[in-house]
Length: 112
Ligand code: AMP
Image (cartoon, rainbow, N blue to C red; front, side, top):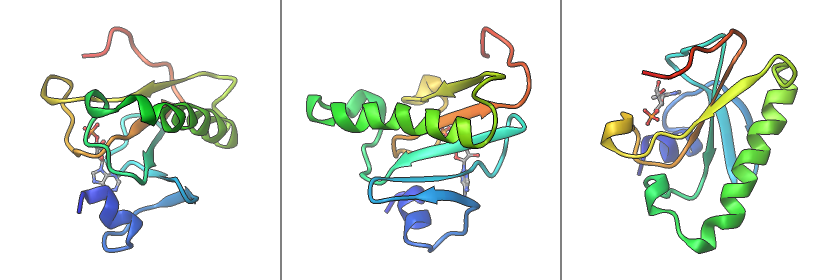
């Protein structure tokens, strides 16, 4: 099981914001901004580069979920960033596709 599957199974604690059949959303344990939330599809695709054509609906829903959570956390108007790390050069730590939603302060660009 991946770390995030263990969070879904409540084997590891997390500060969960929302859960439905397809996604779990929780606060990142090591926040890089005032709002730093992870939106995680429950189906464990290891990384974005492993996604397939049949994952198109899920990937679209992932972005819409990020939009919904940004609205609910009050950062839709001030602005936010979504990040998906895929693979070693991106520093992906958890091999289970997830989206970082960051906001609540001005975010520098380019990222490191
Ligand atoms: P990534 O580097 O894109 O794989 O991101 C993994 C993220 O998971 C990091 O930002 C971690 O801080 C976060 N993380 C690791 N363990 C936990 C946990 N138990 N609860 C919440 N976030 C976690």
